[in-house]
Amino acid sequence: MKTLVVVSHPNIEKSDTQQFLKASAASLSQVVWHHLDANLPFDVAAEQQMIQKADRIIFQFPLYWYMAPASLHQWLTEVWVKQFVYNAHGGLLTGKSLGIVVSFSQPESAYQLGGRVGFSVSQFLAPYAALAEKTGLELLAPLTIARFANQNDTEHQQLLIRYQQYLTLTHPDNAEEQAQWFIDRLQADPDTKIMADELAAQTDEIGRLRLTLHELKAGESE
Amino acid sequence: MKTLVVVSHPNIEKSDTQQFLKASAASLSQVVWHHLDANLPFDVAAEQQMIQKADRIIFQFPLYWYMAPASLHQWLTEVWVKQFVYNAHGGLLTGKSLGIVVSFSQPESAYQLGGRVGFSVSQFLAPYAALAEKTGLELLAPLTIARFANQNDTEHQQLLIRYQQYLTLTHPDNAEEQAQWFIDRLQADPDTKIMADELAAQTDEIGRLRLTLHELKAGESE
Image (cartoon, rainbow over all chains, first blue to last red; front, side, top):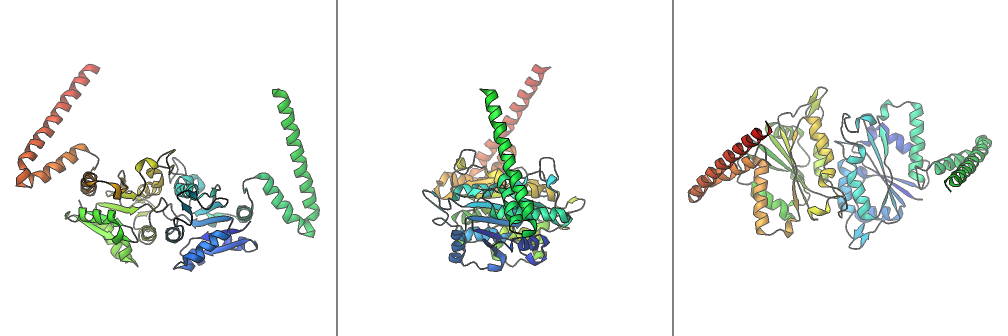
């Protein structure tokens, strides 16, 4: 799967979050990192070609006043035009998926009814759901990054894993794909291969146990 | 009341909607028309001074992918900064109001659950509600303009009135303020003064009848 990460950030060198994400994606051969603000004015044909080549498109940005920075909006206006992303018959990006990686400086709990912000992140991202629907893109649940600067090393490590999975797994929220992702990585390294084989065996065992449980329940309901 | 109309549109000369709104506001002495795209790069101090002088701020834009064009986002990022619009104690724009004039090319009915867009305009504007809350601004219900090009003369005339009221009335949705607005305008013109006096008398009569009705109902419930 080829992934295009479209980053909107007017001051990316000073963003620890974006620098961390860039480093996290650097080892992934099928991922293209594309910083919009560094590509102004846009070469529309080149931008459209990048979209066409990708199986997954990621919109990645910090929340500025609960929305994306200007460059993403300008890019959408100029590049995501009729006849390229949709026509009279429907969306033209069918078969591709859309992910959103969004960072903000308040805790996740601020983004809910009664919280300091009073709206959820999903509410703010409603336009992207409508955009996905219009263009035929399959929308992934967003990957949210709250208060990156306040996260400890373990949380950063977890973020790196979540981010790499978000960019490369067909279904980033699927537990079995996540387990397989770990196994693949551990098996690639001789030092951890034994652990990987053990993990793979356990994963199979979990699958068998689930199946047995499912059959037992089915029997009960008959 | 002084009103600042902040217009975000990358191609305003070709927008019939914006040209119509501009002409509609031209006769209003207390209204400043401010086209963002013509003021790039922003002089932050000058922009902030304009905001400070206004009692009402209007964000006016077409929906591009269900959001404002890039210039409004850039302006918010550069001009609406901490210490100017909010600080640790709360919003710094308290006492001012925020209106949103938003135009789009699909019918209003598309913007609802099960409609072609599937989301309401209010859902797309959630970030502005959060922004108003954060800065202390009183948020007005948005003025929506659907399919301007398809509207007939009567509808355009109604839009002109709604728009002028939105820019100048303390409570644009209040029926009594709307009636007074008509009376003021009719009385200013000798040709329509008699009609205006008649309308004023009827408005008073409606007020008296409502009061009587209210008293009767209060009597019933005692």
